[in-house]
Image (cartoon, rainbow over all chains, first blue to last red; front, side):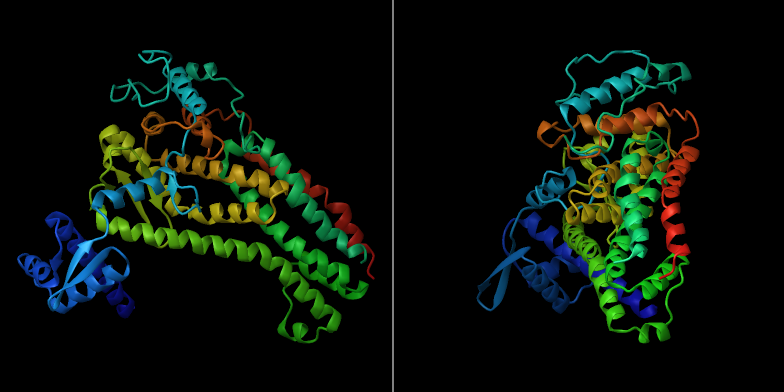
Length: 175
Length: 303
């Protein structure tokens, strides 16, 4: 058990070190040697040159860093910017990727205009039309105008306004 | 081929056709999503098992197929000694069963493995560009588009974009996070992978077709229910609205994801008319009754 725990710690440290190395290279916006990275990390905490060299090599093999020889040392540089990686993760997160095994579970899936209008109607019905939204066309990028205001819980009478047979696509074939 | 094939045949019809058609129409399913999910999962298991037994019963002689029926109906697994005493025809039947069982099993395992690879890669990148917020117990990703999601399984974590942090009030954010933690705690990715595997292996089967679209939505509803133990209906519903409206709607993908509108209506107007649990159990029991004559037939006429 202590062994697996030790390995877990080790993996986590390596993960942190990966992030520390990438952070510096992204911030500097120029290729750098392992020596430069080690010196910079050493201002905060002790880290061995060989450890950083190993992790930089791992990052190179993972295709996150590219490198070229400068004299006797390697100069490392990120393959992509932080923003590019973030954009890739957001593509996964928003379900925009075409090939989509159920790897992530999202709070809201990609939503249609029709669904957006239905959401708007349901929320309005629950609030008893207290303050209709300024934008009659739902969807696009308008924010919920009621957000942040304090609202009472929908009272029992309201729910009878709900159309009682909502399930139009209740698990039927996607048509 | 003999009359003992009737039991697996009946179970295939029941779990693969009859119950899925009833479930897809049932109103109670969305009121008690966890019960409905249990029935879907049971249908999948029974269908896979029965469709593996069916070919075995087809090739077995009367006497040994009667023993197989006994074994299955009594849920009595064979002892190693019994397995060693199998004759040639019985061994052929056994391998036939295993081959049939392996088709959905392999598809399920491959889907899990593929999803896991995607998650490991995603988690690796998250470690580089995201930052962990101990107060939220979530990883924050710097992007103005609002998004809240989770990575289930071994590399489990909840992720929120900085856009979601700006868009949501603290109560709404807590509601969305509770929903995601419910996915992780309930290991919902396993059922999603199972539903996808069935849909890929048996594309025309009602169980796979209806289950494939019903299960993801029911999982969302189950997660909503669990989140509601920790947050108000208002917070969860408005969080749903705020996150949905913060992104560009696209009609092309409308049929894809679980319907947010259905979830929203359900969160806001929890009509617990009737006894959904009772109705659900009655549906299953009534469908199960259809099996009775087949079982009686098999037990009464050995050979």
